[in-house]
Each structure stands twice: as structure tokens, then as C-alpha cells.
Image (cartoon, rainbow, N blue to C red; front, side):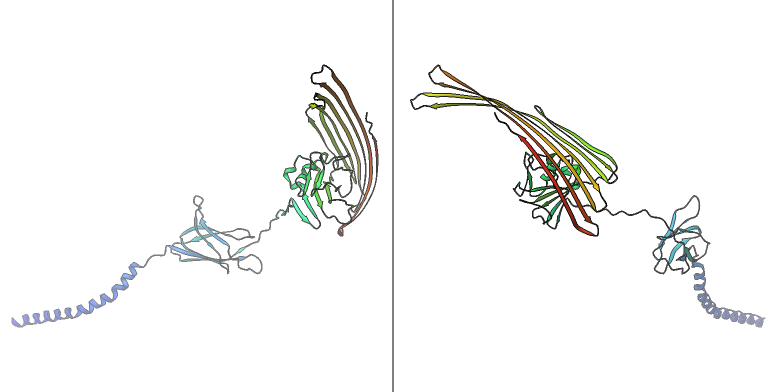
Length: 432
């Protein structure tokens, strides 16, 4: 039957045509929906979060705390490693990025505040964690005292004088006042203990601003008998003011340390030299309340021996020669003893009274034997002469003084001093 076949063919063609016409439309729809499906399949899942917060003062004003340190650590007991760190801004805010999911412990540290510790939990898929305001409370702590110590220079230039701080001069440790003065500019000390200032030994030596019987190479207590450990300062005045009764090149004022501790203190020494030379010394001090008692002794016992020989040949007028020899043997024995008794009494903080008595003994003996031999050349006659010189010197000195000193705390540098003293010298110098 031709008609049914023709209808089937037409229907098939019609269906095929519809299919072909629908394909482009369907293809366009697939193209339009494909990017959205691709985007839905490639979007990453949330694996970390950002932790934010604000550090503020725990007081009523809740002011922000800038520059505080923020630490985030794992909260597990077996793992406390550091995860993130940060610092607050001027507004007190902080932000810790890329924090994985888990349990943490947040610590906020600020100077002058107690450490704040707060647990933080980041859930899986959570993009941010806002902690809000974190209040830190102030911490108070009693600090120890702060001591500021200043040190004086060894040499200080003041108005009209040069001050040497002996305590800072390590070269004088264990020495005497002589060693101290040897390190003073423009001051020299010779072997006998005589002090010279700018080349002149005509000067005034004071102890604590007043004459104390200290001699300059003569009788009386010597500077080498004053320990350097008892000296605080040395003042050198080449042009002293009117308050000093100065003569010659200037004034050297030795300022001793003021021992205010209760009780006794002292020093003993013995210097021994070769061939019978001894020099003992003793210094005692007793401080009680306002009074300070001083006792000092210095002695010297020294023996010196001399030997001389001289030969001479003289041509006489008659043409003969005279041969002369002279030989001598001598000894010198020097002994001296000095005692110092003193009392310093503080009437009050501004007034001081000082009394001192200083007896001194010196005994010097000298024996010199000489043998003179003369003989004319060619003559058997020999002439021999014997000579002996004996010297026995005895000196006694008794010196006493009283000193008064008044200062004013309200007027630094103002000072009133008064001094009265007496010296009695007895000397016996026979020569035979």
C-alpha cells in the first residue's frame, strides 16, 4: 500500500527535521548551563578562619591598649605550639589570619597589665571568629629603690685650690702621706721627707685646716708617719686666701677621714732596716658619742757606721817628700720618740673643739776616731797622731694646741676658726 508507506516516510522525515531543529536549541542550553555547573564544582571549601578582637583597659573608661602582644597557641596538653602572633594597633584591635579549625588558647600581654588568657575555638567551615573587647586589668608591683652613685675625679680644680681625692688614687694604697704628696702636681718630696711646692720648701702644712705640729723635714711628727689610709683629700693652695696664715710658696692642707663609728680602731707598724735600723709606730683612736680620743706613737732607732781612708804625698821646699796617711772609723746613733695625745669634741653639728699635746724626744750621739801618720821619705821617723770627736745632742719639744671651729650649714663655705698653741724646746748640744 503506497499511502501508508508514504505517510511513514513523511512522518519520519518530519520527525527527523524536528530533531534537527531542536538540536541547536538544546545545545545552546547546555552551553549556557555548563559554566555554572563547573563553578559549583570548583568552589573551595572553607578550611581556615580569621580571629579578631580588641584589647582594652579593664577600667571604667575601657581605653584601647595599643602595641599589646597577642599569642595564639594550641590548647591540647600534648601540643602547645604557637599558631599565630600579632600586635594590637593604636585602636587596640588585632587580626590573626589563616587559623585552622581547632581549639586554641589566646594570650594578650601588655606592659603594666596582667596577662589575659582566653580559650578560642574555630569550627570547621567557620570563616571568622570575633572575640569582641578583651579587658586587661592593671598589675601593681613594688619595685626596689634605685641608687644613683657619682664618683669624684682624682684631681679636681676648685676656686683657688687643687683638690686631690686620695681614695681614688690607687697608687697611694698602703703608703703614707709622703706617697700621696709625691703624686700631687707641683709638689715634690726629697729623701729626708721635706716637702717643696713649686721648688720652694718654705710653705705651710696643715691637717684638717689647722696646724697640727707636722714638721717639714725638721723635729716633730713626720709626714711619712701619717698612713695614706687615714687621708681623704689633699688641698694645694699656691695663692691661699686671707683665712690662712700662710708664708712662702703656699699651703698644703691634709684632710683626714672622719671616723664616726663607735669603738676602737688602730694601726701598728714596724719598719726594719739592715744593720740596726728600726722604726716602730702605733696609732689608736676611740670614738664615743661626741668625743674622739687619739693616741699616737712614732719612734726611730737607727745606727750608721762610717769608715774613711786618705793618703797624700807632699813635696817640701828642701826637696824632700812627706808621706801622710789618715784613717777614720765612726758611728752615729739616732734615736727619737714622739707621742701624740688628742681629743676632738663635737659641741654640736656646727662647732668642734680640739685639744692636743705632743711631746717629742731626740737623742743623737756621734763618735769619730781618726789616726794621722806622717813620715818623711828616706827617714825612719814616723809621727802618729790620734784624734777623737764626740757629739751628744739631746732635744726635747713639748707642743700643745687648742682649736675651735665653727661652720654654718645654711652658708656653705663660711667658717670661723680660732687657734692657741704653745711650744717649749729644750736642747743640750755639748761638743768635746
